[in-house]
Image (tube, rainbow, N blue to C red; front, side, top):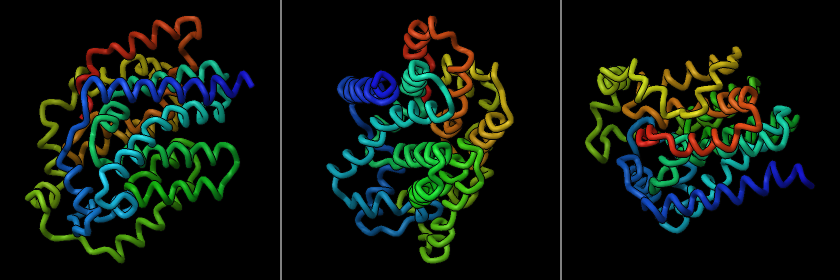
Length: 295
């Protein structure tokens, strides 16, 4: 019973409170992708790669309430699943709670997705972490199912599910992605006029991040206390970090992409962070001034 409290109950309570405070203090915002996904819910055919991300627009349509419940629920449940993931990795229950709290302080994962209307990244992250957790627990069919749901939400999700549990079977989540690519034809015209940017992803990614590639302030410090995880490197963690940062080569966003390596980075962090210093570390993490970078 005590393990259940630390692994699930307390993370759920803290996560719910954190999500509520974020929205009360800041309010939700619309981003360019928000308009695209909401339009897709009304039947708009999107430019690539957005045309592959059909699951949430199909489920939520153009219902603001549905979008809020689905995306908000994913954000509340993500730290809980982080705790369960750590537990399945063999981490003691109290450190599982610490890991959930560290996730709440990652701006590109929580702040970005908790404050954005009609974005699907948070739901994709939940599917990714749930898939990895199922594989770690030995439930392969469920792991594949959640990886497929992640692929239908955002096409890169199965890669990160496979890396988070170091199991290639999670890559079966690409089956619905390939099917969607064959069936769904992209709109040659972007509804927001971004055809040039979207059609030349490498050129765009390099141009948008020029002058920032080696900026510690922008490319590293938003990780806060999780930087300690770099003291406990492993091959899976190194690969996941490389793949996460590689996304910047084909995108205009930054923090919200490279922080997709959070499962293994938080796992490494809780392994090197002494439990007796965890409370002060979490406070410092939540007060990290570089949380201002979250896009």
